Length: 318
Image (cartoon, rainbow, N blue to C red; front, side, top):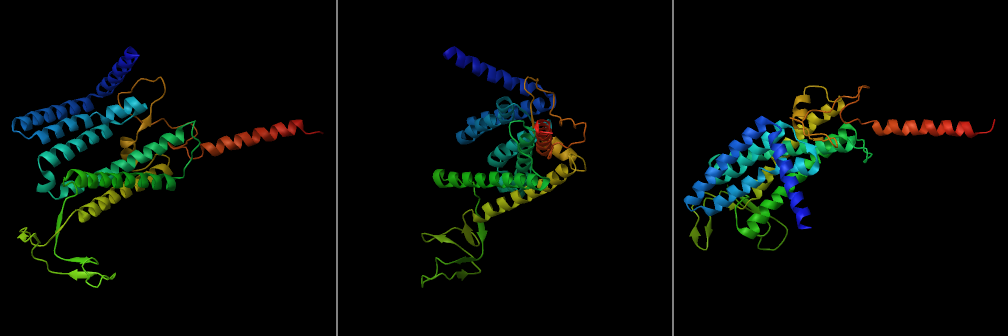
C-alpha cells in the first residue's frame, strides 16, 4: 500500500516537471521569480521578519498552481495565462505585502483586483468551452449565456476572495481589508430616539479612541470602502472580458478579440496525447463550426429524429 502511494507521488511530481519544461519561456520566468522569492525569504529570515519569510514560502507553493492544475485535471494552460498568473502572484504577495506596494501605491490593489476580474472571466469561459465540447455533458449555450456565465463566475470568485479577506481580519487580526479615512458618516445606530432614521455627522476632523486622538483628519472606516471598491473593479474586469467573449463566441472564434481569448483560453487535453509545447486553439471543424459548437446537440437530435422516421416508415404496413 505504501509503495503504491509513493508511486503515485512520484508520478505526480514527474507530471509537474513535464509541465514546467514543456515551454521554455514560462519555465525561465518561473525559475527567475522563484529564485527572487527564495533570496527575499533568506533576507527576511536573517532580518528577523519570520512572518514575511513564511509568506515567501507560501508564495513558492502558489507558484505550483498552474502546473498542479494541468497535471491534475489534464488541461492545457496557454503560456500567456501561466506567465500572467505567475506575475500576478509575485505582484500580490511579494511586491504588495512584503514591499508595501499596497500602502505606497494606491492603484496597486485596484490594478490587481481588476486583473483578477478579467482573468477569472477567462477561466469561466474556458470551463464552458470544455463542457460544450465534452461528449459526456450535453450542453450547448448561446453566446449571451456564455458571456453571462463567464461574468457570474468572475464575480463569484471576487466575492469569495472578499469573504477570505474578512475572515483573515476577523479571526487573525490582519488588515487585508484596508481602512479608509472619511470626513462624514451617516448611521441609524447614533439616533438617540432608537428609530430607523440615520443621523449624519459632517466635517469630521479627528477621531479619538478611549480618549486618545488617532491623529487622522477624519473618521476611520474599517474596510467597507475597500471591499466595495474591490468588487467594483472586479466587476469592470469581468464585464470587459465577457463582452469580448460574447463576440468571440458569436462569430465562431473570429474577430478582433480572438487573440485575447485564445491567449487565455484553457483547453482540455486529449486522452493519451502528450503535453504540447504551448496550448493552442482547437482546430476549426470542416463545416465551419465555432470553438463552442453551440448547435452540436441540435444536430445530433435532428439526426436521431430522421433515423427514427426512417425506421417507422420501413415498419409501417403498405
